View (cartoon, one colour):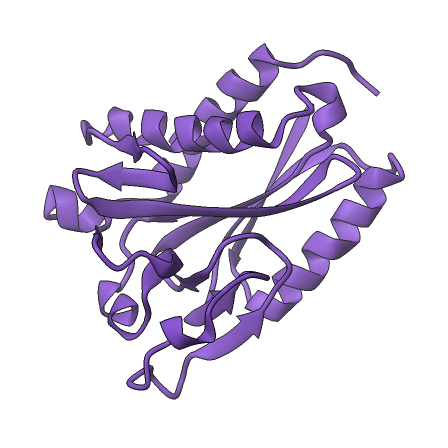
Length: 211
């Protein structure tokens, strides 16, 4: 069973600490699989293999920087962006990192399809794209087959923050949002509702055992 928790607008450090606590408790089988949904204040996060040079010198002074333990390069989180942190034991689904990543991408692609946004993957790259612009980034950490970190979907994100980084270390493509694609502001609560439905559809269909 998946338990969804909507944290609203929550500070990055506080949410990061919560993730680590929940992952530890999930490893010990003290809690059920949990998905945190959250928006953050503007932050740049570096994955464990990120290149510091991908943060450009013109970055805004009011944006905090975090070096974290997920995979991937630098990315941005901020208001108007729906961030999801699944704390899930893959023993109950498929013990495959690639399956988990593709499942997260499928959830986002199906959510965007609900809004008539045609999204896709790019060969050799993680994330979800609308044509040649990235609309969702993914990066995870897995310990004893329990996941943390996750995905960030640009809903009404202020895209100018991406001007100060090389997002995910990718030089040749741009970044977009649902608001930019549809030329209107999108109801965040509705997006959460649709995404939760898609999450349950995919993960419940692969549920192999219950603790």
